[in-house]
Length: 506
Image (cartoon, rainbow, N blue to C red; front, side, top):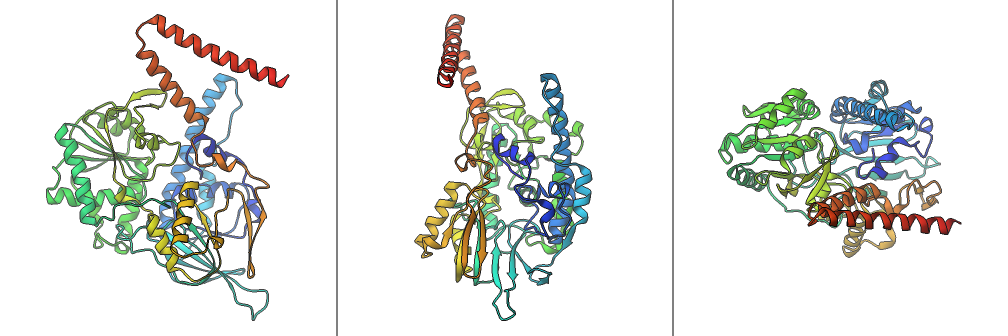
């Protein structure tokens, strides 16, 4: 599922650039919605084969996909009310609960480090250390003749960092024909913090905020990030490193996902098989809307975790509206913020933002803790790739911004990998992988978006920022006369632009 600017997210509603009914099977690396969120759409449009994934991935998606469908249906219902008022045609949700129910019946659980023989290929899943159930997937394709060596591929999926809570360091064998690797944090380095150091950093942010008389608001992804935070908060509360303040988990999905982590406690590191790590007496799980609204009574001395992690949807937006204008409060960002999202704007230091149509002045402290990232950083990616060597043919770098991919490529070349062996496909490029090498079959023949706009803010972001800038200038004008003059200049500029466009067309 595409995330980011509105231009990118609109691709979720467009047809797939292939025939879903022609797919034999799906290999799913993990449950994050940017990897699994369009599976029900795939089923809706004709895919009827098996979906291979780990037990953890399937269990997470049994909650996450119904939640996603609910969001689609609610958003479309609101949009259609506006469309009716504006005389625009109604739109349909990307998929429905019915599509999700069918999709979940097509899952086939796979164990780690166990070969699964299929009609066309054989596959093996390796722990990627990213989230519960996450995997890198090894694929062997038999040759045309019995004596031919199989074609060996490895798909990294999303890779976790070393010393990540709950999971071992990512691993997989060596020696492949092709390696397809993510590049989310290409070129970016994070603080290499131990669990103790990570908790110390979290405690400092909380204590500074409580001392200032504010609340700590944490936009947190429902899967893994929320559970990591609950684990660390439990430690800090028990040790007395932070005061016994109420901790609200205000996300029905995150609450359900936490129950999956409790069920898989025996498989997780750091909690010694204790599901109680997620059930501290200071924790308050708020599922209903009324309970969520009641949190607003706490203007100081509370910790609030809510989804979404990039601040683009869900209950976190209500808490941001309540706290962004409070100088005593802290908004603590603990995950990756995609370009064009509200979280990225806050991370970049925007002083005014729009939330649900309302302009909010940002006075709260905006802080970032990158020690909670579920992704390996730039040097971690280079290390993982080098450990998979030798590579017979090509490395494909995917799942990252253009800047991230270029930085990762630069790091790999500096570490000795030939530049000619590294390929960075554009969206909708199609490659054929063979025993003799790879070739680009369709270089963007059906490209849906110009690659230059794929990971950039779009005109919707520009319009929102311009609106805020105009409002700020008008608010600070010395008189109504000055405001009228400013508006008149804007109108003239717009009229002149329209006139020039008509002249060019004629």
